[in-house]
Length: 611
Ligand code: M6R
Image (tube, rainbow, N blue to C red; front, side, top):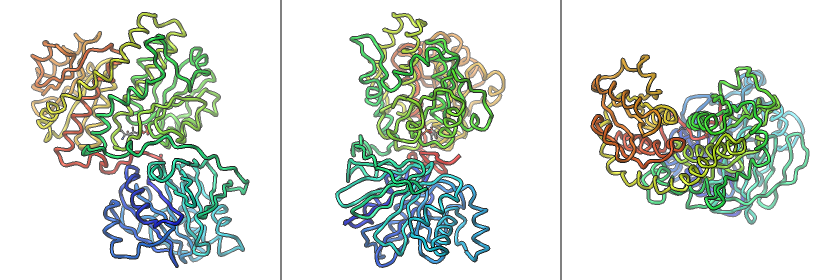
């Protein structure tokens, strides 16, 4: 979590830093701050968002061609002015911004305390600033060496940018576990946690690897490891468009991203599914497909929405490819001493590619000798670089904290993988395979027709704005959709919501149902249709409010439910891709009508880079 930016060159740094921080606010918005280098380093920082920082800094000297900035998601120390970054070392020699966690900070703090260091904040970052300064002042070392030596003493994760008073034309950046990208301009360099603050200035970027340190002046970048091994910077071309990271006329990124699903699904399958040839091709894992075909089982690891996509993947792989699947929360898996066999496939799913628990679970699985694959949205992120092979979802940047188009893109990739492997294993008939391929191509149009009901969905959402609780139900492929619907509602509207397999309701949750409880049910026509109709009757018998997502033309549920949203028919394997969309819109409108900040819900950050 936390977003960091930096600039060194001939332009004024302040506007570049502020704009960059706004792009990175999805990573945290508890406080914001910048440091600008002139004759000395000026720091402006405050609790709140980047807009608060702008007010705070207005009227002050904001000149400077070198600067660093930070938007914080609090880990050590509450969100307040003191804990906001940048942090200066006690004697003011170093100013630093940091994304990550210094796990041994309290031990280091004690040691520094004994040597006379005083701390103004509760953060681990200030400890690191003082450690660097302590090493610098104690020995005859350069600023760069002090940073590198300090980092050898640190346990934890960091994306770090440092300014030293004695080397005013230099910025030092380092990475371990938290992402850092350097944009290479003409006589200027840009630094950021991801490429979104950089894209409008340059398409040439360097992704730092763990243990890399970059020593940057306006006309030179030297790359080395923290152990002083010289590295050749690998400059890559950025595949990102400025339009993709703007709101494009929508009130919120979340709404834009929900509506983008007509094209994002198309982008995910483009070049991978051919109706003409009747085949699925996934270049990123082509060489690994034989391992998947022979796999003893697939273990899917993920968090949050990506975990829900993984649950859909379980149904898909078991149904279409007859491979046993376990779906694990990455955070539990990594600490559980799991049994992993060499012939297991471990499949990590992550939109950001930076989720700390998923990354750590991947490292654990690799140690056990399993083949580790990834499904990721952000090109060049840590997870795709850590896995043996993988597939990008190509959904485009997802800025809203609530994941929407990433979910449908992940499920699309999982479906393509299961189809490919199922066909290779001969578990999936040619007829069904071709039918799935054809259905895939019809999805964008079908999604469009759901989105056209936007106004109606907004109206029905208004009925549930005051509900303190909500229940989501689904069966089979639609059970993970119920979980996802509940997560969407709770994370952006702060309404307590639970998702259950519809049949489980009888085993406890049914006790919660009365006339005040909205029950959102994914109930399209599939093999459990009759069963879910019975579940709806059970809810209605207890006076619950039923809002059902049904297949177009369904008259049976229409008569029973309080509201229905009709969606086009598709095969049950792909039904999650359509049924989830009304749930996304309902959450969005309920949250907006409650006055919540849907793109930046409280306490959350888009990319969870702490465990
Ligand atoms: O980037 P990832 O897919 O690894 O992120 C996983 C979760 O943090 C993420 O899905 C989170 O649950 C979202 N806020 C859900 O909308």
